[in-house]
Image 1 (cartoon, rainbow, N blue to C red):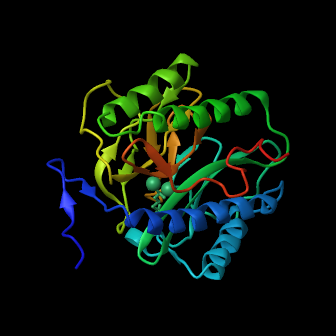
Image 2: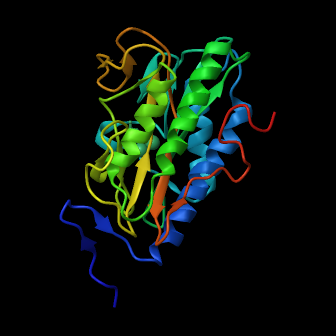
Length: 269
Ligand code: MF3
Ligand code: CO
Ligand code: CO
């Protein structure tokens, strides 16, 4: 008999040790798709074509897209170009030289959700874009470093915020990470800002995403009339990286590590 699911007082589910393998497999599939999509990103390519290839890859892995049909969303990925913060809808727009883009994929494998996103560039990466991408990437890992039993969610947010703001960039407040596992979005909201020592205490068996969005300008966002696309209000560039992680007895397991070691766009060149 399976044990009853345990829920903390903050409404956060604690998964069992044997559940980590399911998350690792879902995470591996999502990360492999992000590895394999890299050659499909080039100047002149449309985001719709990239999403079409991702749709085929999700299928080829025998997985299911978590986003197709989610609240009426119709695509296997979100593709967020330049000042788009998140939830960019793939379409006919062609990538231009120097465009930076986040691709976010969530798959379901045997009922487990793997959610990850990373940054790519079309053509030549400009210096200021490279700085933004590097700081956002490193901010995610500052957050991940805080993941261990006994720390708090506030410790994660604080580490991300102080790092990004220390580089004179800003952290988006309007979107956050989330619990996941056998569901896509569950408690808690994982804020990418906050005060150390505040918020729910991390416990072994918690599964959640950390997915900071960092802007070169101000943190405010707005959602376009398509009801999905979130952009920076000041039109400044925005970047994001996302991992799905689990709290182990002593620290963290990252479920969505890149099997090819290509999480960062300048890796593997
Ligand atoms: N993958 C996104 C996240 O990180 C959610 C996308 S929902 C969609 O939580 F419907 F926009 F695809
Ligand atoms: Co997510
Ligand atoms: Co995501």
